[in-house]
Length: 472
Image (cartoon, rainbow, N blue to C red):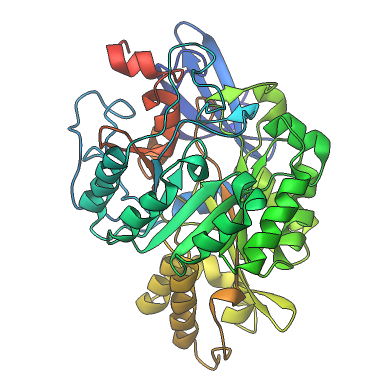
């Protein structure tokens, strides 16, 4: 009797890679890899690699905790996920991090841009004017986050390029007047590099702010491909100013397979040498928005492939150190470390001196010590600012017998490496998107997962007419 050349693991719903209509999909294991297999009545059979590490993939599906609900939901359940976004009552996770896009305009026109922003007044398709949002509209969007979250953990001011908004500091003042625990500024760093006075003024808002700095490569060719220009000098000057004014910074790397993935270890090493840098976030390209020169079969890069590259290129982390993040474990992974006395010490090495890393994943799932489990879950949360991470780490270490808390741990000792893989038409999984915790505020006040916003709810996106006309 012949057998299938794969192991059928699970059934889910996805969308067609071409028309975005919801289709049934199955998850299979074959040749040490995980694939999403789907069939569209119009466009036929589709098979997508979603992981190159079966054991890590299975671990991520188990590394979960009950989701935290928002204080309110914004849209009813009517058409089913992903066509009811707003958040609807069927969404399983609150907003750990919420983006407020203050402008559609940018001082770059990157070949790769999920928001399709740029320097032109009108987008290339001629339909979407690019504008700065008014202070009134921005405040309404911030209030929508507060209504959902009470005290939002992290709000990220984004765009376009937020720092070119003519009322940028008024926006910061409004945001600071709200009960928001931590503000991030998602920026390409051009203004920070060129305008020292701007950086000086920005530093006056410390603590409680952080720069989320685009930092893709040290190589001119890669920057040209991703950003349309050589930004090496801009990056160097931006980091110099951020170090000078001691502004907390995360380096954000957009990864394209075969272009800049060989630089992962070098970027981590560089980040560790910068006083202002608290960590590095690696984001494989999401197939959304503007994608010049992007071919899915050639350029897609999965979370497990990024994880493998970190382990191969950086000497600081072992497989046990890069763990799924419980709020969205199959799309987020994280490694924590401490920088102490010119050493980099992974968190798992601190937690137990003898082989704790061997049983830590199982202890998170099944350990009877509920307090220890809770504190591990809380530490590995995208909701944490650097300051709250320090507190959580100290609380965790105090739970562990015979392990003293290192003296003098502060905000500057924390170093975090994250992998953030957003869903797109290729790897879209309804089961997964329901757990999404990184959201964008729609101008009308709806709170929408980052994944589905860029696929369906951003004006001009590939699926926008689909949800607008309800033609699914």
